[in-house]
Amino acid sequence: MMQVWVPEALAAAPFRPAAVVLAVVVGMVGLRRLTGDRLTAPLRRRLLFGVPWGTLLTMAGVLAIYLFVQGAWWYHHPLVTPFRTWSYFYPLGMLTGPFTHSGQAHITGNLLGTLLYGTVVEYVWGHYPEERGVQTFTSLSTNPFARILAVPAAMAVVGVFTGLFAVGPVVGFSGVVFALAGFALVTRPYLFLGALLGSRIVNQIYTALLYPEPTVGGTTRFVTPWWANIAIQGHAIGLLAGIVVAGAYLWHRQERPATTRVFFATLVYAVSNGLWAVYVPVGGGRFTLFRWLGTALVFVLALLVAAATAQLHHRLPRFERDWHSVAGVVLLVAFGALCLASVPANTVAIGPDNVPQDGVTVRDYVVTYDEDVRNEYVASISLPLGLGDDRTNVSESGVIVASDQREVWIAAVPKGRLALDQRATVVVGGVGWRETVVASRTGWRVLGNDTVYRVQLRREGGDPQTAFTSAPSTADARLDGRNVTLRPGSGGFELKVTRKNGTSVVGPLPANMTTETVGGLTFLRNRTDLYASVNQTRVKIAQKQTPPER
Image (tube, rainbow, N blue to C red):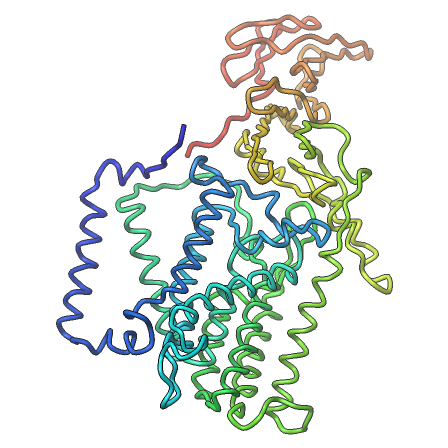
């Protein structure tokens, strides 16, 4: 059965988003009456009926992949794992990664960027010939329909390019969005800045429609730094690719952009879109952010772009000593270096020995849970000249998904997130099929000591199997000379009572609202609390972990 998700606020009060739509329509109609044709006439001169058809076709294609190839039309969560750019030895991921997305917010943001920056680029490109005396439909290059189709074709080529030269298993159309922005900020800086501001307005409208009247409060949740989710290198090569193509276009048209406008357009975009977020993963779900370096780099980037494009109406950058040529050469070298930097990471080969032996097997996937294990994906990156010999020290903890056939190895659910939420799902699959594996974590906070827990995995509709158990933990309390230890096992949790002489007795953890006698102590479980008593003395030994309220 198809699942259709409708926000609760939207279903409960449809008049609120209707009010937003009405306000937007009234505002646009009022603006049209105030300005007449001055707002739309320039678009109609450059675009067929004033509409960026090529950009809209591209958006439709990307959306169709998200809905039907990734399965978001039928399922709440799209299938992502097999469509990442894992390795050159896994062509499917390399070709599909740039056009697939990890969720609703991800694709919404990229489609919005495509619409706004793509419209500027298509406006610059135009559907009609600009040369005097040249008529429409006299050749393929003057055919408006051919020029429209050239736009999605070019975006597809750029998408494949960013996928082939992005570092690591990335996913998303953002490399193309950055390329569009790079082309737009060089060729039409003012229009670009208008599109950048327009994206904020459209985002506000979208949020108001989706969540018209939310009631929010403080919540406990696991959060990864936002900048750690950015494919900074992929964004950078996308931006530089757009700038290089824009430079070639300006040289061909013998146009000169406004240097100051290009400088500030580049700087504003780089800062507002996190190109300063230079970071490296250090393992265990932790990342180091080099904010100082990133801030310096975006200023250098803006200056180089402005200088390199200032003289393009005369000639292309060449190896000369003048400032403009040096800036152009530096940009080209940096662009090439960023592309080459991706080759070692994209030649990863995950062999059978790198795949966990224990866990839930779903066709060619293995899903398991482990802690402080070597990241086999990072360890498989071949760096020249012995560089990065300590890369094998990068460790991961959490729900691990691996496949030697797809070159996949990833900690899909970090340890901290599962510890907080207690339950998580991992979706694996391929073209035309998918399956969900559920991970659940049960834990007890032991008085004055570490939490004990076990992690179970099960295929959807299957029986759970224990994938991991923590070390036992002894409560920081003694009752009648006895120590109490909780230890997890494949069948559940056990109590171990140890006397002064070292003898011990093991018994089961009592069920809810029942008691058990182990080693002379009586244990009572009252919902989430576990008590131990002897001789009318009762001590709280442990408390069961519960998922946070949402």
